[in-house]
Image 1 (spheres, rainbow, N blue to C red):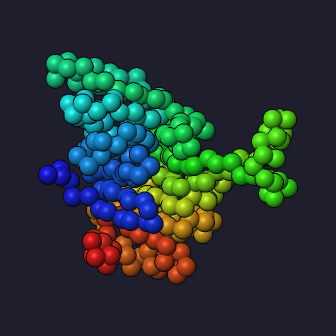
Image 2: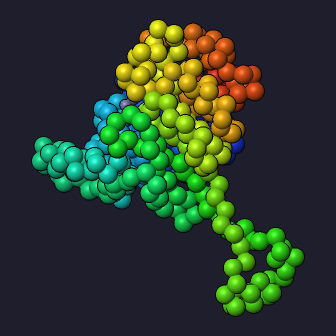
Image 3: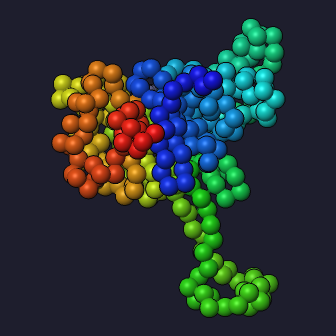
Length: 287
Ligand SMILES: [Zn+2]
Ligand SMILES: [Zn+2]
């Protein structure tokens, strides 16, 4: 039986599973890409996913990392890979050693420290790229992108053998092509992410927008989170086909959040927005 009742969103061939409430727990998985953004309390549904991309060390995002690794060991699956801000790795190792002593079993792990700009290969053509966020020291967001090669226009009409011949001569016949699939901002206060081309062009954006009410502007900046007014400005400069909002405060009821989002966003942007934890959305989709 599943340990969590996760939200479930289907976007074309990608399934997004998750749970995200500010201060309580955030874990958002994309099984087809074999990644889980943050690890919350490690729900059963994410244990078999091979890569956890951890954005920062706050307990509501990271509590499950040792359990995730330990459960994989228990189930006989290969050690999980966790990408995390480089400044957290030593502490994470210490936690694993302590848990190992408490449990009586060593916990196999592959912990990889990342800094903004680093890339890690998830599959041969699929990469996770880290970028800086403004939340805690070293905090990062991640874009998962596919890399392909595209034949240069001038060679488009050539036959297979002609292409092979050009390759033999060492001629570069194709251009590299990047297709950003999903970007996860993690927790962050407002930053102009529109300066990052791969964030702008990500097909799916998973973004925190924690606060909505006017009197919560101060809370947003104190906790280094985004307020809907800043978020609306940011979305106007991005080009994402699907925007999934996570990390809502429990201080504002869902019905109010829906109203405030509708008021803050122009209709053409609002049409592309899904609130991860909005059960109404799920029932609209008949799930
Ligand atoms: Zn958080
Ligand atoms: Zn946080």
